[in-house]
Length: 120
Image (cartoon, rainbow, N blue to C red; front, side, top):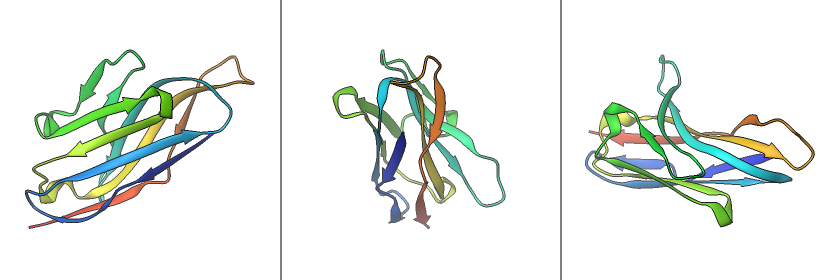
């Protein structure tokens, strides 16, 4: 199983970016998909996640500005980021709680990370 993230870049404060993450491989089921971020010198933190049933969690710092969504048919999760602030600058990682066709148990998988830089 691989998670491929894309969509990061440089944007001015107040701007928008849309991140995408596609899960591929021998996938049986995808449960929760989410986005985490890690800023320099800080721990990785949850930004938002979404269950297969559509239940969503957001970090307080992004509520009202970021929107997570997923396309189950495409095994893809999106993060629409609006009203970006310099403090949103970080490497963003997608995460998936996935069961492979050959496994009985679920495992956690991570994408490679995509850099988001917000200039003031």
